[in-house]
Length: 296
View 1 (cartoon, helix red, strand yellow):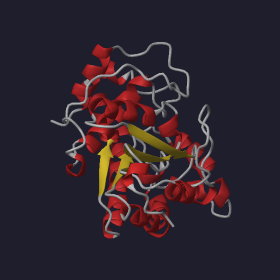
View 2 (cartoon, rainbow, N blue to C red):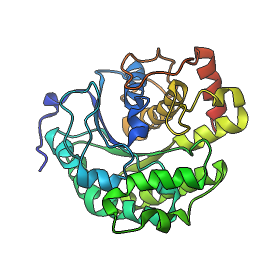
View 3 (cartoon, helix red, strand yellow):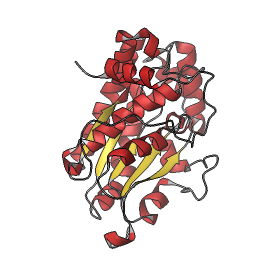
C-alpha cells in the first residue's frame, strides 16, 4: 500500500508516464519535463517512466516495464512504480498505438483500466491531489492492413490462444482521418471508465493536433514522423509534448503551480534515447507547427 509520506520528502511536481515506445522513441517525457520546467513557479518537474514497446496497457500491467537505455533504477512494474513513491501530481497513460482505434481491442484496455489501474490510482489520489492524463496518440503515417496486422501480431503474442490479428483486423481503419477519429473515440471511452471510478481525468488530444498540422501545413507535417511512419521525429516529439504540457499547466488543479498557458520554446533536450533524424526542425518550423496544430 502507498504510504502517506510528508510532502517535504517528495518535493517538486511529479509525473508518472506509462505507455509504449511512442513515449520513449523521441523522449516525449523528457520534452514534457523541459517544457514544464520553463513555466513552473517553484521547484522542478520530476518524471518517472514505465514503458513497454508494442504493448497495450493491460499487457504492460501484467508483464512489467522494459528498462530504458541510459536510465538507471527504473521500475520493474506498474504496482511497484505506484507504491514505491509518495504519490504523483499527474499520471499519464498511453495505450498501444493501434489498440484504441480498433473497437474489439478497446474492451481489453477498458477492463484493465477498471480492474487493474483504477484501484491503484484511487490510492494514489488519496495521498496528494492527482490528475490522470490520457494521451491520445496519432495515426500511422500510411494506415493499411499490413501495418496494422504487424503491430497487432507483435502486441498480442502473449495471447496466442486468441487469433488476435484475424479477430481485430476486421475493425482496422484504412485512412488517416478515420484512424485519428477512432483513436479519439477509444480514448473517450477510456476516460468514461476512469471518470466512473471517481478519478479526475482529462485527454491530451495529441493525435488531433497531428491531424490538424497535416491538414493545414504540409511542410510542418514533414517534421513530425520518424522514418518508420509511426514514431516521432524531434518535431513530432515537441508537438506532442506541447499538447501534453499545456493540458497539465492550464488545468484548474494546477493553476497556482505554473506561470501561464503560453509555454515557451526550448532547446531540444540533451537526453534523447534514439538518434535524431538528419535534419532537425528549426525554431521557426516548430512555431509554424504549433500554429497549425492549434484548434480554430
